[in-house]
Figure (cartoon, rainbow, N blue to C red):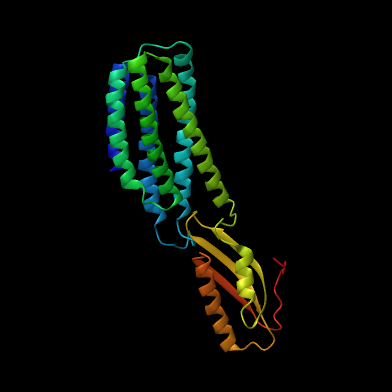
Length: 279
């Protein structure tokens, strides 16, 4: 729905931008076309990312969602640079702009993009958040155009059209760059901000029968699903009953820390941990 709403509005913007001689509206048409490509691609990648793990992708296809989020963000970066370059001339040499027509199109823009945001805002993955963010930015951008077009209509300050274009593009650059940074943090397997590794380790080591923990690694597969692996060394009096109880308790603790998928290696008394690094 969001894809077809945006695609329809691209043609409305192109026609409206030409009729009103507004570079801000034409700039947003380019931006919305980029959103259409991004939404279409994101939809296909999101479907693919939900495929179950197989022999080729034993962790599943979730990172295809991240790939889509990166491409979506890069499309916006390129489009924003293009808009800024084209806007400079409109600021230094303003052209007459039809303010009343801009007001009408801006109202239409807020409504269309507002509906699209309502359809996408429930997404929780990086890919879905990227799309929802872009559509929310569209709404904010059109509110800015609405205010600017009213200024142009009443005061005939035509240079405002170019300034609006630059402000919208700068905002898009900032948000897209931030989104790309967040995605690369996931790809570099940094520990998610919401997981307190120190407290998690302390909670596990406080369990009866646990001597120490090591080789603890926590990362996110797609910015949404958190995974972890760890070694747990049991004390000298450990038996199979303690072994089983400790595993269940650790799984319960991991759920409290937001870890959805945990792999545990239990080291029994006398076991030597291969390549023990003390982590």
